[in-house]
Image 1: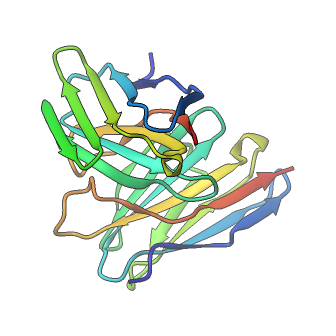
Image 2: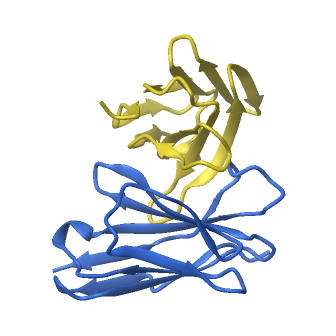
Length: 114
Length: 111
């Protein structure tokens, strides 16, 4: 069974630009979660999508947004990039019938803002 | 005050040692407690979860939750070099709610 995949692996942007990160969940999983892992801060919850709807949002500004497509894949958009947005962005998926603690993580996208 | 506190380490132990990893938290509403392992350049993988208080054992790993003290632990027996990784605790109020992660403890097991 293929795991959660994320693309691109690395992304380098300059301040003020927009970044788009993509995630494909495990087949059959309907929920997708996005996290930011910045150095020294641990994983910070960003967004949770299920069945195409945004279900919950972490304490991040509106320039962090996303969506979930009918095939359950997801996209995270970060507008007006700031230097402190440099981090590893992790996507996780879980199946609907299993409690949300069973989150399976992808390898992440490393975003560098210069 | 952070929701979840975790000593970042690093922690270095000889092979075969018993490792104790700990997290404290401030929100008494947390009911679900998870431990994840993250190898370098990889995403976290779920090791164990517990609901409410008590102990749970899985092979060499034991997870403990003490809700009265707002303290959770992960014990690794007979530690192996392959256990070298960063260990993250996570917790949530409900399964549909957001997870709160600790910053992770870096563990190195020396052969």
